[in-house]
Every structure is written in structure tokens, then in C-alpha cells.
Image 1 (cartoon, rainbow over the protein chains, first blue to last red):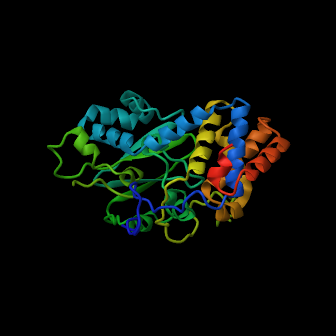
Image 2: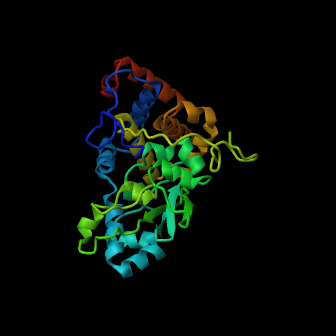
Image 3: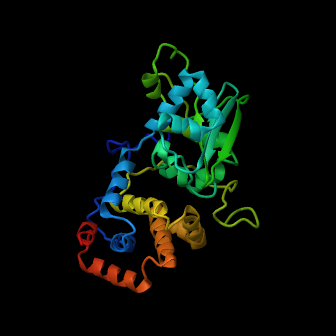
Amino acid sequence: MPHDHHDHLSPSGHPYRPDQDTGLTDWQVMEIAIRELMIEKEIVTAAEVQNQIDAMDARSPAQGAALVARAWTDPAFRDRLLTDGSAACAEMGFDVGPMRLIAVENTDSIHNVVVCTLCSCYPRNLLGLPPDWYKSRAYRSRTVREPRRVLSEFGLDLPADVTVRVHDSTADMRYIVVPARPEGTSGMDEAALAALVTRDSMIGVGIAKAG
Amino acid sequence: MSDSPGNRWHDMGGDVAGPVPGDDHDFALWEKRVDALVILAGLKGVFTVDGLRRVLEDMGEEAFETLTYYERWVAALNQNMLETGIYSVAELGERMEAVRARGTTYAEAADG
């Protein structure tokens, strides 16, 4: 996996950044000034900002994984998810906001992958904040041009007879991939299955694997 | 710029580009705060994702290549707040000066 060979990783699997108590930048000064002014003008409160950050920190691909595991174990739910992703999320108690959520399913013959060529639209409520590479020029440009090559850079080499479908997100419409359920998982319950569903498998640059 | 004539620079789908970068990072506090302010401003009805994108796209390709994601976002948030009249250029300038005077680190400067 090209994204796995960092030497020094934080508990969340990311490289450590330099301490924040060095090198105040103009942009940081601007953030502080804007935040204070927005609080003084009673647009937001300090508590709301902190609560929003806490909610962001608590987010993970867990909600997306729960959605996929339910779809794997409940055929009627799977049908509803593929028909209306937003409604199926609401059914699970997951808020995806006002934008439309479209779930696309991988099968033996079709592999789906999601990109946002225009900016960085991403189902953040279900998957957390987008990884840096999702926002990169290379991923945005090439995923619609040479998806198989991009996928192979993620360690995913698809057979030639598998159709690759690339879905381009917009500000009002987000996609989530329902990866194929791995072989040998027939005895597993929903919670155990959800643990197999990775962020990358729901973007479509990976697949779900058993154990 | 976009490889396709007539497309703006941000419309980069289909362009030739190098390997997908493997780097990923944990967000700094100031970046999380920018994200939170953008989301909250939207919820409060003083900001839209269209307004965010308009400024990001008008900032141009050089900004995309040289500034970080949340540097561009804070610039876009600021432009929209100014246009909406939440605060004035003068108020922003005065406040930024006051913030800078507090210290040379983010922790000091943020401790108003």
C-alpha cells in the first residue's frame, strides 16, 4: 500500500506534524481574528466552535461502515440504500445534511470509485474529513482519466473484465461505495462485518477484506 | 491550467498529473477551527458552499499550488464575511494587528 510506509505515525495513523507553538503564520492570525469577530458579532459562540470541533474529532468512517454492514446483512435495507442513500442514512439515524447521498454497489463485474474533480466534495458526515490525497491535483485529475492506474497506485489491481465506474461528486451530491462483502464472512454479525469496512473501500480505492 | 481549453483551472478532471501523494496529516487546531467556522457560518445562514467555492476558484491556480487547504478556506471565509458585512476591513485589520501583538506563537496569539 503506497500510503502505509511512514516511519513515524500518530495513533490515528498519520505522520506527526511540527508543534503548533512555533511560527505564527498570517493565516493563523486571520483565523483567530475572524473567529473573535464572529463571536463578538454573535454569529457563533465559542462553545459552538468547540462543539463543532469535538464532533469533527469524533467522526470516523464508522457510520459509513455501519451502513455497509447493514446492507450486507439486510437485503431489503440494501435495496433502500441503493434507491435513496439519504433516506437510508436517516433510517440509521445518520445525518448526511441537505445534500443527496448516492450509494453505489461493487459486484463481481463492477467496481466503483469516487472523486471530486472540481473541488473536494466528500461524504464527510459518514467518513470523516477527506484524506489529503483525495484533495490532491493528481487524484482529482487522473481518476477520471486513468482510473485503473490510479487504483493500482493504491495497491488495487482489478481484473480487465471488471468494469470501473468513476463517480464525480458535486457540492450537492455525494457518493459512497458499498464494497463487495468478502468471502468467508457468512457467520459474522453486523458489528464484526463493519470492522472490515475501511474508509478506502468506501471511496473505492480499496476493497473490504476478511481479517 | 486545465488541459481542456475553455475549462477554468479548477476543472482539472482528465488532466495529466503525477502520482497520487501518499501523505496525510492530522489537522492542526487552527485548521479545525477554520473548518468549524465554515460549517457553523453555513448553519447560521451567513455563508454557503457556493460562496466558498466561488472565492476558492477565483483565487486561481497559484493559490491552489502554494497555499494549504485551510489557508485557502480561511481566505474564502474571510472574503465572504466581509461581503456579507459581518465585519469591516478596518475591524479585521485592527484585530489582526492586536492578535499579532499578543505573541509569536499560535498558542500565545490565540489567547486573547
